[in-house]
Every structure is written in C-alpha cells, then in structure tokens.
Image (cartoon, rainbow, N blue to C red; front, top):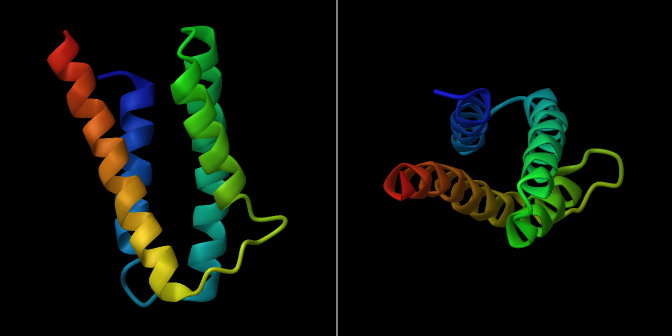
Length: 99
C-alpha cells in the first residue's frame, strides 16, 4: 500500500469522525490536515498529468483551508465531510479496479 493510499484512508476516517460531537480544536486540526493531504494529492495528480483530479483536490484544499474559513454550518459541513470521505474511499477502489 502506497503512502498516498494511506493518507486517503486516514483523512477519510478523520472526516467521518467529524460527524461526532468533537471539541472545536478537532475541526481546526482537520482543516490543517485536509489542506496538507489535498495539497499532496493535487501535486501527485499534477505529476501524473491528471488534470481533473488536480483541480478537484486543489478545490478541496481551498474549501478545507483554515485561514479564510468558509462558514457553512454544521449540517452542511457534515454532508460535505461524508461526501468527501466516501469520495476518497471510492478513489482507492477505482484505482484497485484499474490494476
């Protein structure tokens, strides 16, 4: 298993944990981790010339970045967290199918 795959699983699990009632610091921590992981994923997609993936990961890095917070409310953030978490898992499954 590659480091990129581990990062995707790790981030997906952290995003699913956002559904629980956690202290505010946890959500801020997730924003930093998500920015870092999505930045790495965008760079990897760029190196592999996968333009769509690069744009998606770059947009997710901007959405989750902690510096200029996008205030969407807890319910909408929970929906986003689940969709993004599922998307990360699906991207791993698609990669396995392509092999």
